[in-house]
Amino acid sequence: MDISIVVPLFNEDESLPHLAEWIDRVMDEHHFDYEVVMVDDGSKDNSWKVIEQLHAKNPRYKGVKFRRNYGKSAALNVGFGQAQGDVVITMDADLQDSPDEIPELYRMIKEDGYDLVSGWKKKRYDSKLAKNIPSKFFNWTTRRLSGIKLHDFNCGLKAYRHDVVKSIEVYGEMHRYIPVIAKWAGFGKIGEKVVQHRKREFGVTKFGLNRFVNGYLDLMSIMFMSKFGKQPMHFFGLIGSLSFLLGFVAFIVVSVMRICGHISLTNSVWFYVSMLFILMGTMLFLAGFLGELICRNSTTRNQYLIEKVIEQ
Image 1 (cartoon, rainbow, N blue to C red):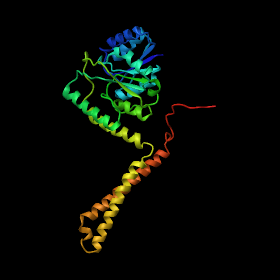
Image 2: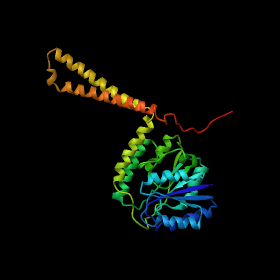
Image 3: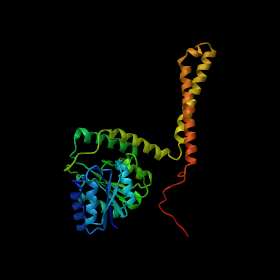
Image 4: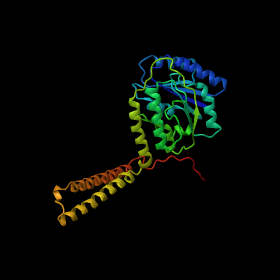
């Protein structure tokens, strides 16, 4: 199969028939063998009924329905598990992503050899104050921290090689950082394509301002896990050791000053500061040690993504 199109959705019953008609036209024009996996993230409208109707008309349309709303990351993760195509395309269901972009995204994966191609909505039709300005700041920060030169990490329109989606796990609200997760998993050839952004025709946006706060917390989590997920002692142990050493040196200095009669030990603020650093260092070191014990006893401690194997 050439292409799997994964469409996460929540309350998009008005958009789905138009999206399906558009996808079918593009796929037929380019003679692609394809499937469309629609993941209903606990919709309260008639979205699932529409998906059933689409499947009855065209068996290429498949559906997964959540009992409740889990979020876009959960929907994408389940969709990735269902996808069978050589190239996996993700797109939103609100008609703001254009299926006309799919052939070029497919070509970039198959011919240019990219692992992942992310869309860049260079010209946007969203609110500048509520979305555009925060989005620019969010993307700038992510570029700086991850080293991935993308302009629009959160664009829903992306293309992946099949083995990329089978090698990564998306949860929480980490769909914004799929390029970062893919790079961490060893898929470093990440490209970008300017894509068309359309005004929403039906319904309302499902994202609030809290996504930016949650997004940064998820970014910190990903960056920490990518560097120290299997060796937490390298992080906590280092900081703890430095804190303990600093506190111990400060304690020696304070003690010497007390012996020389320059200060009263219990009345000196530096005595308590040195004790604080020693305690913090000890606690951080113990946190690293406990984290290391947990990792060593984890069932995933020796699970690594292997690209190729040479056997007899």
